[in-house]
Image (cartoon, rainbow, N blue to C red; front, side):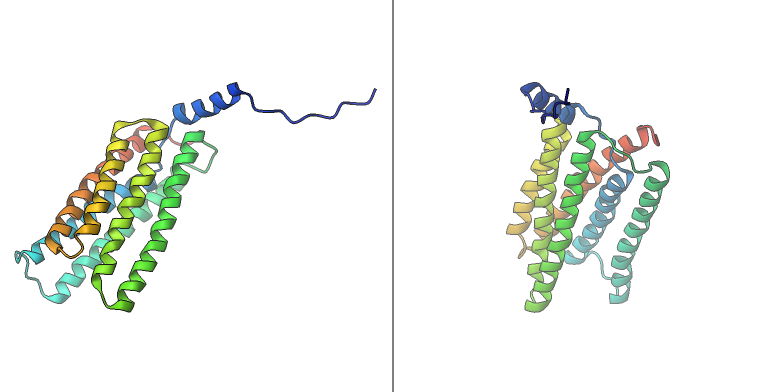
Length: 217
């Protein structure tokens, strides 16, 4: 008797429900690289914004070379910490297939990073071409808008209150920065607060979770 050809299995409502449950209930161990990127970036660049606030208000009067060294040092420090985090992730957590929620959220933040890189190039080239520094300042507004979208997606999957707060804060910050590009002191003030609250604080939460979760396996 000839074997019956296998028919493609149709998804039932129960299958769809199980799929959605796997997204919502699946655990998400934040990658150390992502946690450190937020934590170190928020702290270091928040400090840099405070430094610029001091310059604008006249509290800091450093020679041009000292200013350049300080700003360059911030980026060097960030890259050094980020390199450490990448190496630690590779050593302690070899690539493996995780929960669906973990892969979904990681993909969302990776995609946001790709978009940030494109926006950086667009606004950077535009500012140099048009000789208008204000064009470059719009870059930060777009970054916060993209981050807000990523955190909102994270909240829809995990329903953690701090994720929703970060998303809403990022949206409000994006609008505020876009409006304040011609107001240096207010712009820097909003950016400083947002970096500490919307980057460093979520970064600390993820860093804590990344260290608490079991490694390897």
